[in-house]
Image (spheres, rainbow, N blue to C red):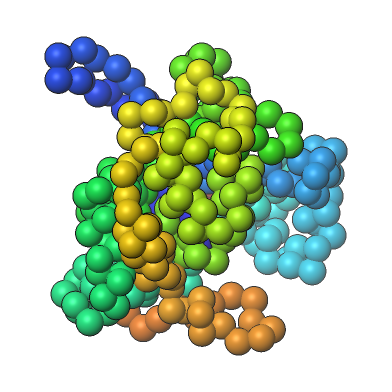
Amino acid sequence: MYASLIPSRVLEEFYDADGVQSFLTEGGLFHDGRARDQFQQVQKPFFDPDEMNLSGPSALAQKLRASAYADELEALVGEAGWDDDRQVTFHAYRALVEFLKEPMFRPFDARIDDFLTGDEDALTEPERRGLEVFKVAGKCADCHLLGTLAWPQPLLSDYGYDNVGAPSRGEKDPGLGGHSGKPDEIGQFRAPTLRNIALTAPYMHNGSIHTLREVVEFYNKRDLEPERWGATDYPETVNHEDMGKLGLSDQQVEDLTALMDAFTDRSLLKMGEGETFPQAPPGVRSTESRKHLFPDWTHRLDPVFQEIQELEGDR
């Protein structure tokens, strides 16, 4: 859900109060940002040994040519490119990217959407109190933005990176720093959208925290109760300024946890048994009418794109 709206990975320029310049990474797919964009992201499961485990693009192209939808794909690729493994797989990746833009994946029909557009009855009293904590004492809205940027509705993330000090679990994961090579980015992971967060347990990049209540308690008292949470993988880059000792009361923790249910899309809650995909609610704009808003252009950097353009120009 909403993956098509995650911006491509970029370096954003910032200046602090003293005018000192710095650059921070934002956007990118997967928790560690190892895919620059969704075009890169959709490729990786085909070849990951823990997922489809194909040996390479030629093996994928062979399966695509033998698929039940091969005729439709060939019509898309064109006769001239059908025998070219690189062109066949390029079009398959593009088809996946386009599919993930479908309205059913971006309904924006959670109760928080109704509240933010003026329906004050959309949230319960505890949820309204939780929203105040979210915006002020909890500092959640600093990263999980309630305002709008490139998209007309809030995405509930700035898609920046941070090391929140998640408890260690399993093999160490260096996160963003593992592929950027920057020591200060070791252990950093991208801030997820909070949309549908109540449906996606367990939490943190490594699944080390099981419930949303525990997540809120972790952010609130991580630095005050280190024995409760145990060791973290990369303590040298943990953010101690914005989290870890928020000073929230038990009531505030409870209210903030309650708010998380308001981020769940109704279209997901309405799904019946056996339904593969949710139904887009009425009024969600078509992909074509929103074409200019999607962060989708970097496939044009792929050398295959230019080859396809030249082929189409010859038709």
